[in-house]
Amino acid sequence: MDFDFSDDQQQLRDAVRRWVDKGYGFERRRAIVAAGGFDRAAWDELAGLGLTALTVPQAHGGLGLSAVDAMVALEELGRGIVLEPLAQTFIATRVLAEHAPAPLQQAWLPRIASGAALVVLAWQERGARYRPDVCDAKAAPAQGEYRLAAIKSIVPAGDRAAAFLVPAQLDGRIALFLVEASAPGVATRGYLTQDGSRAAELQLQDAPAQLVTADGLAALELALDVGIAATCAYGVGAMEETLRLTTDYMNQRRQFGVPIASFQALRHRVADMKMQLELARSMSYYASLKLHAPPEERRQALARAKVQLGRSMRFVGQQSVQLHGGIGVTDEYVGSHYFKALTQLEMTFGDTLHHLGEVSARMQDKAGVFD
Image 1: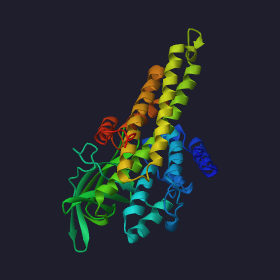
Image 2 (image 1 turned 30 degrees about the vertical axis):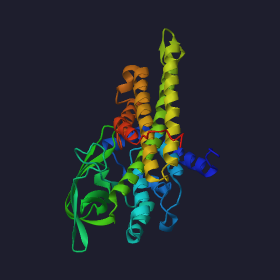
Image 3 (image 1 turned 120 degrees about the vertical axis):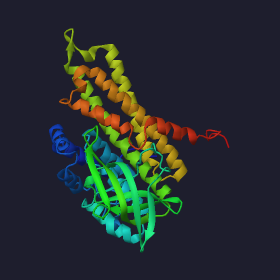
């Protein structure tokens, strides 16, 4: 089996890396945070690179590329801790392409591909604690369409989105709906999150909605797994840059007349950071490769990946702060922003403890070695 990236994937990586290095520096990111945590111009630049079209089927104006291509792009965006939520585009694309009726696909996938429409997943509710099967939102049929009543929390760039994918109870089971942001009864309240990105509280009061699928739990679980794989890839890029910043600082910072990088105990800690990064990288690859596995196998694999990524992101971020000393937590220093991003990523789409429970719940009496 060939584990090397293709030439096209390497070119994609290089293109995104050049954009991050030249077009999304630390000062621009700080300006975007100060302006609200989402920049439409940066989003349009991502669309110009073809990233919003990356996984959209060719029949709908996209490039029709794979989850591995998405992973490559997200790793590079993670290196720059880019705030604009490209992962949401990959989530919406996969869910709509696999579950939505043809008219809904034709209406939204070309707009997603061009970057004209940001469609985001609005699934979290207070008290659900990351569980997709806990849903208090209600849907009811009304004159040939559906009406939703819901409150959803921490919706990525929710007050900048064109539409939302919203799970809600319909006839005693969870269904998935698409709600346009401009529809009556839709209200959002935007705010900054701890890492500087933008999120919103979404309130729906008798809001008109289009049914994506009546099998909403399966579609939602797919959406969450795509989101986990995206978070893993983004986290690998962020950890890689965190490690680079840490080693550069250690080579510059001097104590007792020598760089602190020469101290054996500190070198061991850097080696541990590198080990955690590589463990995370291998599990990120595993996550992306398992996105097309049968649902039960996919869910188990993505939970395993998130456990390792959660542990690695927390370890790398905390060790970086310790090795930097006081400067590691100052807002003026870029390293503190990577620490905040890694800490928030550990809790995105379920924290480590939640996914450890998911892995445990799916364990069998045998490890699969014996029949």
